[in-house]
Length: 127
Image 1 (cartoon, rainbow, N blue to C red):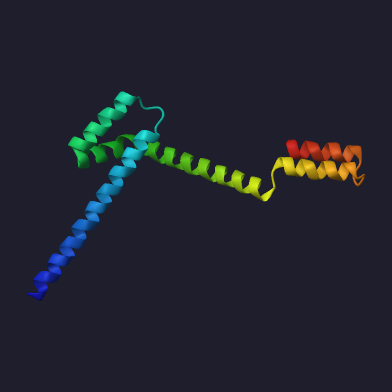
Image 2 (image 1 turned 180 degrees about the vertical axis):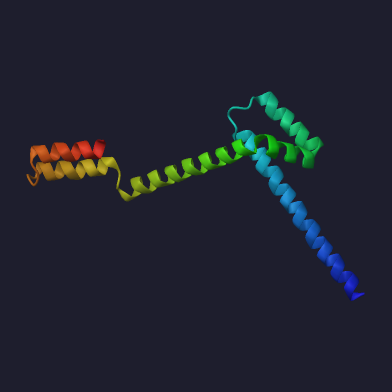
């Protein structure tokens, strides 16, 4: 009796694992469909219909046909998110170009740097 329950429990865990992976793949494909700006609305609708009617085959066909584009869109989204975050952190920390220009202007105004040094520093910050 114990062995039967153990095998049932292992079977349920295995099937649950497969089902969760299937759902993750389905959501990844659907998210990629809506992320793709090159695909028309009609083509997106056809892909959604295929994914609803033939889910496993639809996922496999999508990954085979559009897998490399899926990877590029994911990488581009991650790069854009990182750049946005880095820009936000620089702005909040006060390390942006405007802050550097203010510091250079203050140094120039107080006479600590010459006009030539100020012009070179300004060109480096803006350039």
